Every structure is written in structure tokens, then in C-alpha cells.
Image (tube, one colour):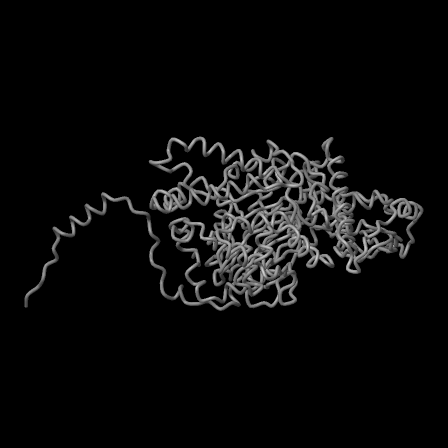
Length: 622
């Protein structure tokens, strides 16, 4: 019997050739059993917001929502107390703040007067003096000597308290109050609990607490579960890596998918393409999604949201002689009350005019239950309109608008953006350069209603966000345009700095995002499908109001060819706050999802899987 010996010489030559070529490490093949579809009941969808954590199984109809906050006991007696602010923020107490608020309010009043009511008449402003005189003479009525609301019992001195219980920790107790997410980003600061390690620890505690208490999944069983994590459209890549590491190695999920909120919102609403406007509690983001892909150049984040409207509403109430004179935005219970008043009374309906009488109750822990009478006029309309005239927020010296920025590369990722650019063809580089010049022209020509200079502190706290990322090849181009590159880079940085210093209103942000789409056909799609999600614009009349603003301000060339501008605020009659989470649940059921899982074993062995974390395709596996 003849036995064929292997050709060892040829194999050795192949080995030498392979050793001479640097190849990226490719994760070992995952066993077929892991690639089999997993039941949606064993997939947990996590949507971490600035104020609310939404979490649930993919098979659940609705998620559980809890305040995204934790109270931690002081480690030493006499330790100074720390609490993350609720409605307060930097840039409100500058000398120019009040003047900017008043200028913004003038623009709001002018806009209210210029838009006619449905009957064709002009809206008559409510006389503020009459409202103020009535409110100043109001005194509370005591409904009950005890409100029935209690502070959280901390007599057994738990190390931490999470969610609703953390909100009701007595300020006199020895606990610090931390909110891990602020304005859609990690809440990193120099105070207690502001380090990256402390923040990730807080997230781990809050998320595992919610999983065990509300989903009734023991932590030891999480190895049988997978997780879908929703992240903002404009994200910090390094922070996403930390979150994936937290979910796989610390919490113990067997697999993770990371997906952007805007894409999940289209999944949840059943739309294939839309301009997604996410108005949250502390930030607003706008992004155009087409066939499941987030267009990178269209992404825009605004550093204001529902909490800023609440604070503006309180300022207007104070000008109207608000009868609850002890109210302070620095107090947690008062902040919660003001948010409830905003949600109850504010609207965007021009037909609601004149002076109206209201009443509200105050039930604070260990205090009497009080009833207040309140008379209001235009304040209920003026506060929500600040979203369209952000100067009314009175924020000075802070970066309000943020564009998508280029990643600075990752030494642990052999397929980072620098690698992708280096392997691009000259045709691809030229096409991107042309696209960038067009985008820069749009940025340069875009007018905003009010400007705010970028503060040094904002730039230092987020150094990774200082360069525009619409073109990823700016530092790696070779050949034809190399001599002009420094001037191009300087022009780009200057233009971006000027744009990001502008406080864009919501309507202008939408128009800007759509204008950055690559083709007129895509722009037409976006105008005909503007999807509003999040809880920051849940006012009566918001849909008609925003639609009117877009129609009036869209370019005349598109006004002729776009058949219908449609603003969708409640797709399928769903709560807009839950749409993105619902989209994450829908994602879990798709066949194509099986290719996106990052498994615990490959993460532990190789770090970030190169195929799944390399490029920004809009589906952002991380």
C-alpha cells in the first residue's frame, strides 16, 4: 500500500511567508451551538438613560423603568455630603445668563404672536401683572397633617440604595447621591464618585439590582442570558468598550450586542427610514436612519432636554408670583414636583390662550399635604418653546451642539479607523474628501439664532470630541493634496468650533441633519418621516407645532417636491419613551442578529473582536 508523505518543504515555505506578513488576530471559531438562535426570553434589553433606566426581557411587552440613580453610604463619619445636581447645571449663573434668558423670551413671544390660531385670529397675550397679583396673594390649604410619604428607611445602614428608594433618601442621612449618566455621557467629574472606576461600579450595582429584583433573574444564571445594550448615536468608543467589558466579564452575560438608539427607534416604530429626533431628559439627539443604517454625517447632539424645559418653566413661574415660595431647584423633592407640574400643565397648542386657574398638591416626606391655587397665562406655552429658542435656557459658556467626531484610533484594535483609511482605495478617499467639503460648506453657511462660546472646561473634559469625524482620512492622506492638508485641517477645526458654539433650536437641528444627507432622494425620505421619541417633547400639540415649524423653515426647493412633511410622535400609539427599547427587543428576534453577538469567551480571550468593533457602519456593534 502506497502512503503519500506530506510535502514538508512547501509547508515550511508557506509558514515563512505567513510569518513575514503581519496579520490581525482572528478569534477562534465559535462552536455551532453558540451560533444557534437564542429564545427572546433569554435576552435582556438595557436602555440606560440620563434619568431613567429601562430594562426588560426581549419577550416582555413593556420594560421596567426605574430612576437611574444610586445612593451610597459614607465610608467615614463626618464625611461631607455629595449629591449630583438635578435641574442645575454649569453656565446658568453667569452675568450674561439673565439677559440671554430675556432675549430668548422675547423671541418666543414674537413667535407666539406671529403664528395665528386655527380660527385665523392673532393670539392675545395674557396680562402678566394680573396673573402675578393673583398668585402672590395665594396661601396653601392644608389637606392633611401628614402627607403619607416617607423617606427611605436607612436605619439598617445599607451600603447602597438604588432607584426610587435612592430618590427618597433623607438629605440628613449619610449618603451620597450619584447619577452615572449625564446628558447621554458618562458623568465623570472630580468630585466623590466621579472617577471611571466608581462610575462603572455604580452602573454594575444598579443594573444587577434591576435584573434581580424586577426581572427575577439570579445573578448566577446570567451566564445563560445575553444582553442588547442601547447607546447614543454619538458615543465615546472607549466608554462603549468599558460597558461591553462590564456586561460580559463583571455582570456575566454570555453575549452582548451594542446598538445605537436611533436605529432601534426605527425598529420599534416599524419604519425603514426616518429622521429620528430623540428628546430626552437632559440631551437631544438628531440622526437620519435609512434602511437600518445611521448616516454618520447627520448625527447631532444638543446638550439640552426636558430638565432644561422644567428649569425654564420654574423661572417663568417665579416671574408670575409662584405661590409655593419655598421651592428650590437645588432640592430633590422640589425638582420632582416641578417636573410633574411641567408634564401636567405645559403644552404647544396655540389655540389654548388666556388666563386659566389651576391647582396642585404637594406631598413631601414627613410634611403636611398642601393644596395650592395657581393662575397661569402664556407660561405654559413659553417653556416648551424654549426647545426652539434655547437662548431662553440662559446657558452661557457651555458647548451646546456636538457633531460626530473622528476616533483617534485604538492600539488594541488592529481594524480601527486608521487601518480602514490606510487600506482604502484612492477613489474612496477622493469621494470622502468631496463629501466632506460639501458638509463643511453646509456647516459654514448654517445660521443659528443664538451663540454661546465653547468653554475651556467642556473641551478639557471631552478631549476625544474636538475633531470632526465626517472624513476619517484627514491625518492619513498621501500624495496629491498633502500640501494643502494643514490648511484644510485648520479650516475644518475652525468651522466645526464655530458650529458647535451655536445653540441650535430643535427645528433648525432637524433641518441641518436632513440637509447633511448624501442625496436629494434621501432628504425627501427624511422630510416625509420625522420620528420624535423620548419624553422631552410629550406636550399636547407638539406634533402639529413641530410640523408647522419644519414646513415654514425647510428650503423652498424641497417645499415644492416633498409631497408631505410628516412628524410622527406616537407610532402605533406607543409611549415615545419606550420606542427605542422596543426596537432593541425587535432586534433580538431578527435572523441577521445572530452574526452580531460578541460572546464572552472571545472577548475574554482576544479583547474586542476585530470584525465586530472595527468600523462604524451605523449599526455600531460597539
